[in-house]
Length: 200
Image (tube, rainbow, N blue to C red):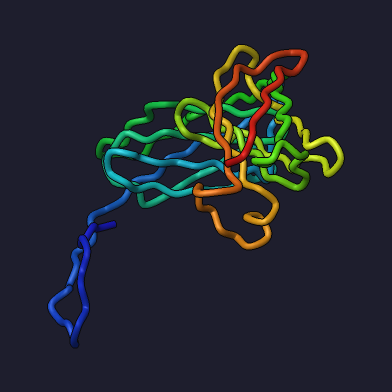
């Protein structure tokens, strides 16, 4: 690895030779109720250094990510049955192994009821839930008749930021917040907590 910064190319450019520094490996495993979980994506990221990567677990639930620089990383895994994370795994001059992510099925949920700016039911809106670290935990589309959908697999008592993009924005891929958008927050419950939002 080596960071070369930002290069503005307005003409032929030379002299960008880079000497790579040795990277290190981060190894671990993902389990659910003691059993290996295969085929799930594990994300590794350092906010301070703006670098990281991802790897998929094998049939034994093991993952390995190579080429990491010295930094402190957050390691996350999310599945429909729950999630797990380590907030501070430090790579410092050597490979790191034994990072275990144990998924506990989360039973918390939030049912969002969404209306448009006129107060009519907003069917087909995309509703997203983010935890307090900004990681997306679930998403759903609202029912065309009721304007409701349920975000689940959340931690009971956990606080979540909810964002809503109207059907027209979903179809066009326009993720602006000027209209057809709503945001709010709710605490997940079991049974599901209810959050009513009106789009602008």
